[in-house]
Length: 239
Picture 1 (cartoon, rainbow, N blue to C red):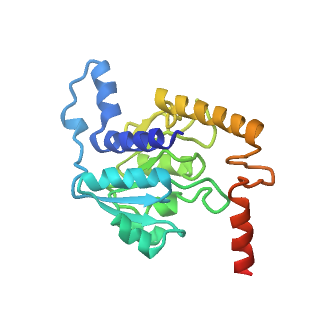
Picture 2 (picture 1 turned 30 degrees about the vertical axis):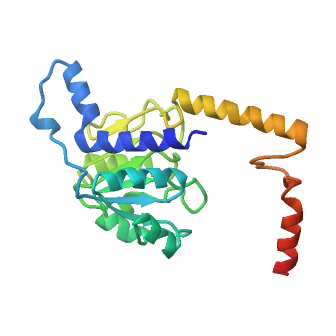
């Protein structure tokens, strides 16, 4: 229900990071006309590295393609055929970090992805590169990102998610001009909230009227009765 909203927010952060939107806004509200200090970069012709090409990353890739960006993807589950269909180049994470002008994270938080991007990885990136994370807090090491931004290792970042939420008052990320912050707004649209509510209601109705369970996380799933015979057939054929 909130996939589109999450993807659109990531795109918004991509633009904000490229054009220093939050810094320009702060300066204007402080009475400054800091035109030179807020000079940005174009997205057109740049390389976008997407870490994790799930449903959200897919939408971001489609938007980036319309902006004439070259798209690289690091995703162990992405097949060569799917990459070709999506008109993206599949690469390893190291190559993505080294070549991308913008890196957008769209991976789940797992034991493999926790602190996946720290100072070592940030130092692989171009000094002009910018990092966007609207996926999950904890994938990017926040203290090391703050260090990389402070010493100019990378040019900027835009974050919607954090390892601990709300973001701590003493976080080193709070006082940096080169970062844009939002308070986990990926799913915070009227449309997404309505769709999620409708989906939940439909799941309850299907369970109590038809015995069908959708999107179960922590129990054995009973298949839709209409599908069950085919699942048994597939299992038999597979064996």
